[in-house]
Image (cartoon, rainbow, N blue to C red):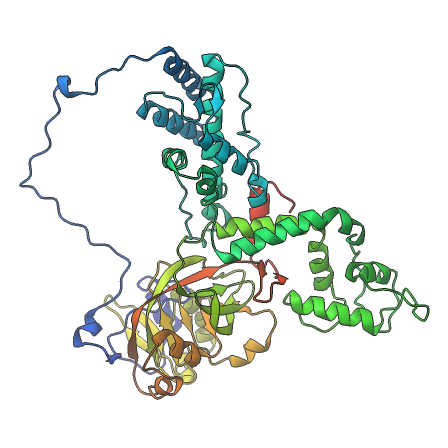
Length: 561
């Protein structure tokens, strides 16, 4: 039964003990109709849970192998014994839990090959070692730090020296592979809202793959992200490092001060001219913030996602300060590190949401086939970082109000006006046990707008339309409770539904109850956080670190904060 009358704050309070969900949680509603889908589709409820098979009690437990079948002890020659001694000593060293696990895995790798050297033959580095070393020497190109596991020198032909060098090179190779694949920063230490999980290669797999590869150096390099977004940042890092000595003099920090508009005089103007390489003519006053300076500032603001007013604001000064070579280098490195958290295969056709850029893009290969503005979560209710697969969309959605919003926003107003929910058209639905749930019916005032895009996930967030379309005009669009509000939602629907679906056909479904439209195939979606990226024109773009994640990653990597 649906109660559409006045509801007391006490009744709503009871619901909080019974209704659970995230800020954008939308419980499955049985009211929608499936459009152009088999009858069984309405029962095909997507879920994250995996079925667990019951144990087969008819099977007998495996019998213990007789002692005679256990692995025989193999006698070691003097070189193998030397290697084992080096590894035993390394395992016995004190260190962190991670360091001990690393050494134990290294020892297990050598034990599996009976402590034979991997990289040395006839007291010299073999070809695979030389190839791997060439890549290790360029670790800084990918912003990796191998100071703890330096490339060893092969000096001496005695067995102890050979053993020590072989093990040390394995340590360096394994450390490179693990760092390149994302071992340095655990995303959950940055925020619990980051559930993107890097596929960190284990020590044994890395050493096995590199030592057996036709090109050991290329294999080692392949543990870095191969995405174009990462590669473009890597190239910009190389350009910055090459140019840093020459530009250091023009990158002096610009002091804070009053907002500057065209025509104003200020001692900081010469620094701004130098920053943009603007020449001064005899007719110019070097302290005047003239139209030429304002135009250069406006171009910079546009490039960095700021309102292109040409006015020198505090935010603009902060962005210019991030352009200092050292700070900019660290920002590039922090963003390269976050690329290591992304799936290595993001899909040939995919959706990417970049939170600091407030943008959603649909890619086909490297080509952008759709792009639109988005509204993301506020800093206190951030949009989570993760990857998933979009499976269906719902036109005319209900909005089941999450308990957090009921408690923080609705209860105080209900205490003042018992008819508050009724006036807004919300429905209060009694639940078993005496509680109630609150939902908003479909319609143009619905908080989800006319359409939502579903990819069932642990965060209970999704992409959706919004009735407050005026907010898209803001340069900074962090207004939501965690979900992503999309501009041009019906255009996005046409793209993701594919052949046979036009924007007009989707709009024709507006009105009435919920209608679910299943996508012809799941489409990968990646919600990422990149405050530095290279656009389709090859220009480096910088965005505000709205959740502070870049600062935390820089700190975790020991960089400037």
